[in-house]
Length: 297
Image (tube, rainbow, N blue to C red; front, side):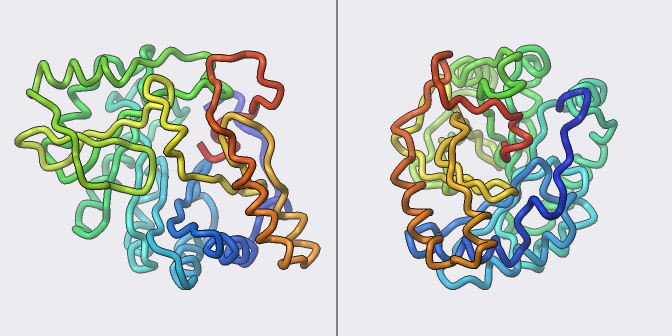
């Protein structure tokens, strides 16, 4: 997070729950079935379990999952699970308390680890850890994170840093480097043949591990041709791709009461989904300049 914090958004600027449900009902019409609630940090918003319950009640919706930093999760996981939550992704980039405080600005690592333990009591809940790979912070922690997947039914996913916003200031390390290190320590990584999850991650099994090792590698293993995601920001902008700042303003349509325009607008956004990202190019006119925390990364 930026040291100076981020600009606050008023309640009026963000979509309310009813507006989100109206959008998702139209999304179902074009084949979207799975929904992930993300942020920023979604659990700072009041009544998120209620939102999850409302989404699960939409005819045609399948899995509803949540991505969180885990700080507030311990006190909410029971209610979230009862609301129908199918899975939770917990963002955790270091297991070192001091480094965690430096990255996030909070001395809250113990709360996150407590939340992970609380999630594990629900056997049906799919629990994943998202680890953004950063040479400056966690290059020496790959094996420590892998041990979590070895000892618990938790998938640990290593994510290459996208060069967006502050991400442009950090150097990541690649999927292949991590795989080499893991295989040197634990033996061969075997690709998981069955589909696991609904996104771009690829998974591997290691003999003796209870959980899986996953990779989301937008840089070294570009997955654009298989990307099946579209992003609705808190302020109602429907973004076809994270790299580009453009999107379609659904908030305006919603607040003008023109629901009949929602479906055509969503279809335009899907049609406008770019063929691929160009993170290695500085000449993109439509390049996203916001922080990932502002657009839901």
